[in-house]
Image 1 (tube, rainbow, N blue to C red):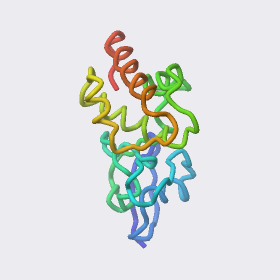
Image 2 (cartoon, helix red, strand yellow):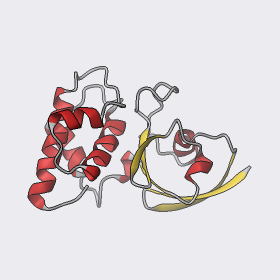
Image 3 (spheres, rainbow, N blue to C red):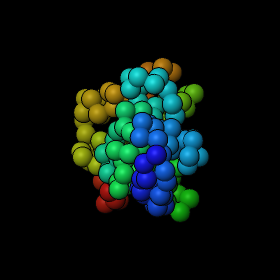
Image 4 (cartoon, rainbow, N blue to C red):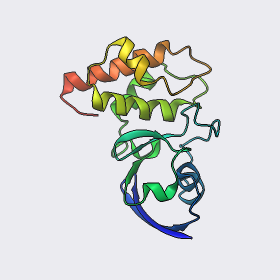
Length: 160
């Protein structure tokens, strides 16, 4: 066992973990944060995307011990005081989901994208989310939602 310490969604955790435990399984099984979805187990789908140190990563490719002393944000930690994050709100308002399986990872990838590029073009949005697969929507409303979130953020002066 290896002792790790990390902040997840603003809460500090200290736990003993097996050295080969994946971050996605640590979040789901030890912390109970099941919004981080296990999709393909091969890093192809992006459903397990979280923010690690503010950057989107596929948590099925990161060992929990690699996240030691880091800050992790999951979909559960994205809202503030019960208010949806602008990207979550834009996904809701633009009907950017159907089954919802890819949505947590897609939203977190979009948050990272908008943090790096607050006003992306449609092509930049498509490139920014390309590691996250959606089998239901055809991506049109997802792209529209990310664009709307960018517009909402720039009009309010808020940051991602």
